[in-house]
Length: 146
Image (tube, rainbow, N blue to C red; front, side):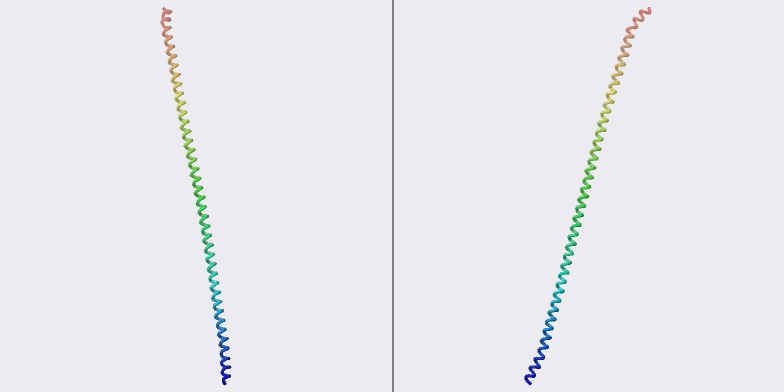
């Protein structure tokens, strides 16, 4: 009876040990599964961070492109301003040339007026000489008439 009891206990312990082993294996499997899930979550998080980093890089590139575009626009505006200044300078030069031509024209007109005045004086002098000659000839004519 004593041996029977031992055998009976042994037969009960063995399935219990097997069950415990099975439970331990299941727990280990569950733990492994949990670790795998955690690893997958970490991988997903890493992928999300990588995607966010790529997005930030893309945004930086876009901002850099926008900055370059603004710089180009500023350069274009500067060139336009330079062109405007050149046109203004050309206009001022043309105005100065026009004023010089006007002064030259006034000078020529003044010279012409002076020449005309000189001509008139010469004519007047000639007339005076003619009158003087006539006055000198008048007594001779009177003598001849008498």
